[in-house]
Image (cartoon, each protein chain N blue to C red):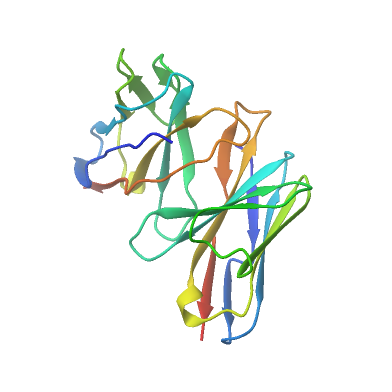
Length: 111
Length: 116
């Protein structure tokens, strides 16, 4: 799987948008970008994924650059409950596609 | 979203005993499940891929005789930590891919194993 690079940590003020970047410069044409988050002592929670088009769901928006070498996860109105480790993962979109986790970004939302 | 259930959520055992962890996909069938372990303040590390009806595929450095995986049905995979020792204490997490929902991989809540 392609290696991803994320900042170690970020802070965000409550109510403001949180923009979490991810670099995946070696992504292959058939690999998707997935975002998960892990709140302390819980399993990772799926957030969003995409191939090349920007995506939006009830949790977040995903912006993928045209060359697909990087992406940004946007939490439009961060709350304290969004404090977590956010993981950007690149993998093939198949039943057997393995998710390889990097170190992720620790997002701290502050009052 | 789809639900993946793990049981137990927490287990304490004596050194030398074996511990079985169950992973179930509750509302979808999963021909493939994955097992991870996570040490404190570290990321998830993939241990093995569990394949329904066939042998599991282990990642490099993971002892297959130590971590026995059985995927006997389309909704259940089990991980057995054999002859557990204190260094096996960790957070074990499973995941399953819902091929009926854009191949999104869903994760269980994890099992915390403490070996005394």
